[in-house]
Image 1 (cartoon, rainbow, N blue to C red):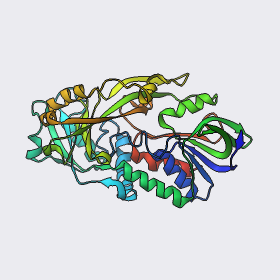
Image 2 (image 1 turned 30 degrees about the horizontal axis):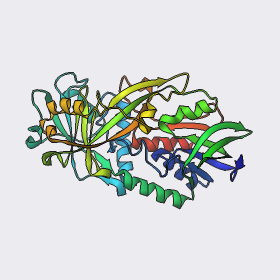
Image 3 (image 1 turned 90 degrees about the vertical axis):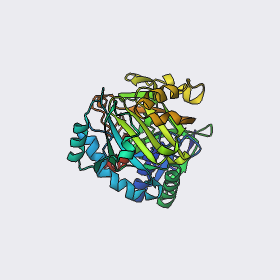
Image 4 (image 1 turned 180 degrees about the horizontal axis):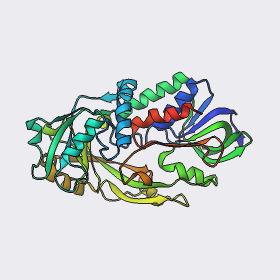
Length: 370
């Protein structure tokens, strides 16, 4: 097995937004950093295949901590990544009358607690909703991001920081090597190896696969095979982003990278779920690479248009498919903290996973303590 330029201060496994951001931060601190990405380019998987929402706290009325962290991080993220932020649309949150886990009053109270801007929606917007099913609609301040522009920004930052990037490269095994970690890599079908003082496993839904291949303890994670429908919306919805809370939960949000909207639904976006406890499971991953299930879009649309009738005029263009991964213990209150687990079976092996793009500042703060 060939040896590659050793040793590094840090090797980052996974070229999504979190992996790229950590690589840039570490390199700017003066360390020699290698970033490994198994795809042909960066930010092609979970960092692209999502709702492209920059959170401002509204999404989490049942988790004070998550909502508050979003409020703190929102202006920082918008400032740091202004070049890919899209704010030329109106954003509304609507509260369902039935089956919602929060009332309009509870939602309003929570947003006041975290100082999130909130106003009653104008009449021409409330008229779009079915008043028999919607208690109240609020005008909020929340943005989207263009994932293609974000990728270009990260590529520029990596180059400026002097990070070495290897594409078409997969980390297949980790092992302790004295005070360093030895990383076995598969690059374009050829095996190589190198080492680093710190290794960051930023592979999102694949975190446990690398741990299992290395004979290390797994992290308790839950996965969902998720479908995000990409739709053309009618003219009256084109400049709007809409989320209906919080039980009959769906969103129709601008997706700038494709100049379309996403339609997602709490019940129909997931096509199946599984938990990893004692072994890394590949169960539904094959659908991403081979045969995918039939789209749930007809079911998403049928339920969503009951609350927002104008959605009936949507046209399905495509779907984004991805494995969504969360920490099971956070599901009851719908919180979305980061995972930053250091010494994860090996000294200075750090497993990092963020459920929201604005969590990156919390991950960088943890990294600064190393």
